[in-house]
Structures are given as structure tokens and as C-alpha cells.
Image (cartoon, rainbow, N blue to C red; front, side):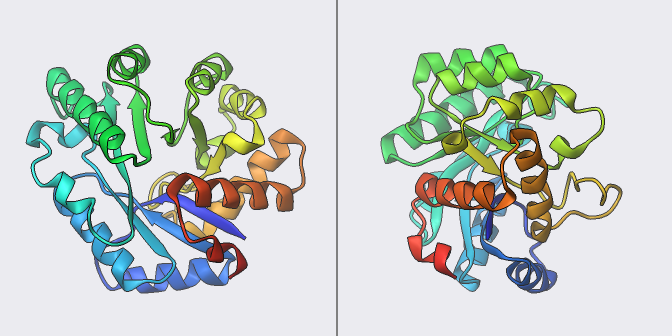
Length: 253
């Protein structure tokens, strides 16, 4: 059994097939992640439709320029379990840096005030990401999703008390530094994700990613850790249940 704790389901009728395929592949739960206000609303609607789907509500740094008005109300929707994804992205710069920083800080504060998990996206902005966390605070349940740093950066995240989540990038031939980071992650701080429809793992590169492939990511992480796949599946499933406060019964599905 696996949990894909970070994916982006389509808003159209294909979502049902994707969820069904994931279930058949042994994925007992999905967390459908919001990236803007409307997308977060759709994620909450998907969680209401499917028994194995939960949702987050957040504003991605790309959309920070549009603010977070209406976000807190979405956190009251049933089966919305976290704030995010939010953070900083200095690669594409779709929103000004100051807007990104302000919106990230506001969402950290929201997670702290509501005692909710925080899902962080950071790209080419590590120092500012840590600086804002130092200033505002680190929620007890914080995850760096789609972690792409090296072992030193992983240690810095772990020292904050955060979890690390690995995506299909860990399977890429060029990702030796990332595999080194995965190798130092304690099993009780580890999560796996697809970030679908992006970042399909090897040997599925070039195709549309989907949550059923989270087991491929998990198998790659297990190989890095030199642990049985079943052990990593059980640990990451338990970690996701605890992190998001999911119904433990999902683990017996």
C-alpha cells in the first residue's frame, strides 16, 4: 500500500479513471494539492467526490501576485487537510519576489494559527525560504514537497523538524545529489509523491504522470535506503496518515 501525498488531479471527468487506477495499483489515499484559490476549491470538491481523496488549499508562488483572499474559508471544507502548496520560486518568477515572500509568510502564519500541516514548494530560493521560516515560525507538521536539494540541504530541513518528500526526480540518472539526500532521511520523516501530472519517474519519462506510479518512486527510495519496498511503503503510508491527520482506516483498505 502507498499514499500519494502530493498530486494534482484534473478537474474533468478523467479524474475518476485516475483515482480508480491508483486504487487498483494499491494506492490507498491521494492528497490533491491546490495551487491557487480556484484550484484549491476544485481540489476540495474532488475530495468530496472520492473516498480515497483528500485536499489542500494554498497559493503557489507562481500565483502569489493574486493574493490569498478566500483561502482561509477553503480550509473549513471537509477533507481539506493542509495549507499549501506555498513557498518561493525564483526560477520562473511568475510573481514578484516581494509578493511571493508576503504570501508565503501569510500562509505559514495561517498554518500556525489553524494548527494545520504546511506544504512547501521552494526552487532556487533556499536562503529566503529558511529566512522566512525563521522569522514567522515552523509549523509542527511541515514538509518540503518534491525535495530537490542535496544532502546538506536535506540536513538543514531535517534540523527544522520538517519532513522530506521525494518525487520521480529521484529516479532520474542525473539525480545523484538527490539520492544522497534521500539516503540520510530518517524513515519516520520520509514521504513519497508523484506531483502528477508532472515528473513521471523512470522508466515512464516523457509520459503523463499519474498517482498509480507512486510505487515506482517508493521503490527507488527503498533502493537508496537499502530497505525492503514493503517497509518503505508501510512507513510512508503511516507518515502521511499522521502528517495530514487522515483516518487511520485508510491503511487497512
